[in-house]
Image (cartoon, rainbow, N blue to C red; front, side, top):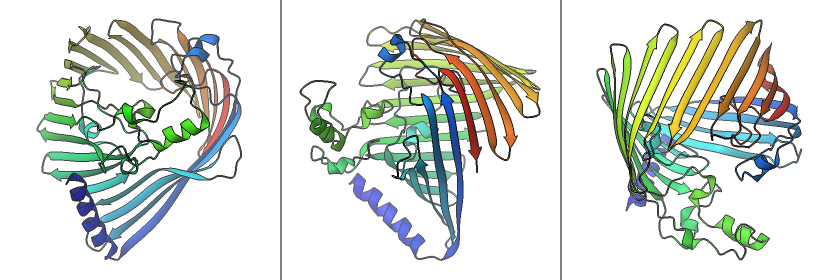
Length: 404
């Protein structure tokens, strides 16, 4: 029934759009980057399964972003957007497209299909690092989502259609459903107070339905092909199959923004109750949070403090977190020298292991062109070759980029 309702809504909406003439536009933008990186990953970094040194040596790529839209006579706006990957380091002739989203919108409602955000993550507002708010985050999956705005209330509902490899759940004989994991989110503004609620149901995905592999972690070509053809939304690491619920209230009082939230991951038996306070004074904004954790395994409470300073050409951020007993901290800053030149530096530690650090500079060449020079160290590979807030590569990098 749920898939029939979604399909009927989409067909009716798009049929109305197709019948109406209107004004159309097609816009193009793009970027090209090429550079050199001399990283020499340590044995510790290479042993980290999440480490990805994909830009070692010379590298280059070009992407084109396309947006097509039409304002229809019936008041609706139809649009489609996608990214075309023209060329990468291999210089092969295969042109691919991704990040495709089609939508049909009115002033107060819209339906979206493709690589779009899930409903719960669209509206959820946390109160710090909460173990219980592990809502699925869209990362290459295809979904269908409907949005509606009524007065101060905004609400969304979505379903997953395919995993991040493009396998549609209905194409996998192990499942009878056309869609997976209902997701719901809503938010409402009442004066200085904003209320948000989110829910996602347990996914129908069952790892037992995946094709067998004789040697775990080392599938043959035939076994890998079977795995690729099977529906598996967990492959990208951002999809949570569990049922999750959360509610939060935020408001601004005497200059301070206070957020109180509760979240529960039912299957994992995790409950989080948190409070976060952000207060600006002059060029400084201080944010602190404390989350009381409860549930299976007797989890520890989480807490953190962030202090950000920004005044003129100088910006500095200091951050400290205690995440389930693991201390994480960082100190990062930037200085706008002028005439298009900016410098950056930082030191951080996310796992109580080796400290990571970087120094970098960018120079605006005008017309959308920029030169980047950076040096970064990540001996244990815990930042996955994305070091600091701007995600610098380990080693020395010289990169020239153009935005069109």
